[in-house]
Image (cartoon, rainbow, N blue to C red; front, side):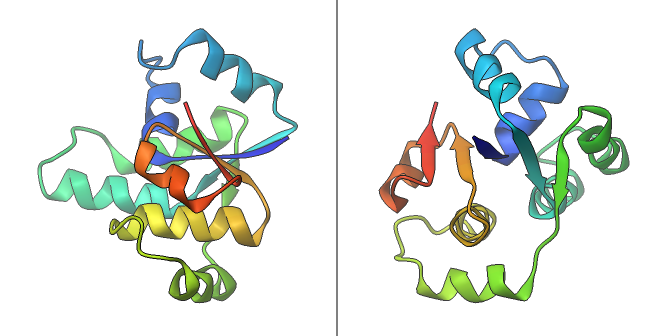
Length: 125
């Protein structure tokens, strides 16, 4: 299975958070490929600037590769796909992750239950 981690799961993974349960860790380590979107790094950078997150965006970005994950760039196809998504969720970063999951295709692993409305390409943990 090819996974795309949402921003929370990626941050929990690189900080060894207790919120990342054994089951979630097994899903991640058992995947054939694990991707982290550049959109997640952008989200981290914005939240750091707004004072909503204490992190170093450069270190977070470097953690993609050092964690053995694959960086997923944002393409025009991803951006176009956002336009056709139903408005189940209004967060632009999450909508972009859903669009990437549908376009690539990847399974988006998320803790956000609202995203389940986007179908089988989203797995809520």
